[in-house]
Amino acid sequence: MSEERLARARRILAQHFKPDLAMQTKARNGIAALALVSAITAVALSCFSERSSTTAPVTGECQVPVSATGSTLVAIRDFKFVPALVRLRAGERVTWVNCDPPGAEAHTSTSEGSAWDSGLMAPGAVFTFKFDQAGTFPYYCEPHPFMKGSVVVE
Ligand SMILES: [Cu+2]
Image (cartoon, rainbow, N blue to C red; front, side, top):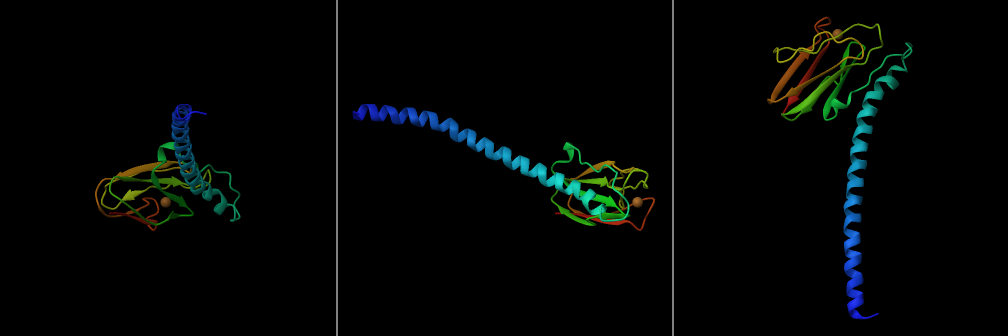
């Protein structure tokens, strides 16, 4: 094989490999996105698994909608906000999900400083709020004021 032919072969190879590399990168990003969705699903499903260890059978839905992707999730169950304290950066969101079974009581996420109020959330209901300002934001459940939580925005 002459030098010229070798050079031509290398050029052709280079042309063919570049798009392949680009595709591999895309695929990796796709897998990363998938992993993120799986992580969020796992958090949502933990509502089921943790509840299944109690005596009450789990029949309720506790699914997080696609729009909640990128949110910090707080589950409401057994008269608690879980986790009770979340930390985020300004501009991020928190999504509360009522993970109690159907027929259980409605709850709210109500800011003590009236920055937000979800209104009554029936089991399965979801509420999202975006925190644009830094600070500590305590909140409670209006029907059950002993239910308390806090959002710390840095
Ligand atoms: Cu409540």
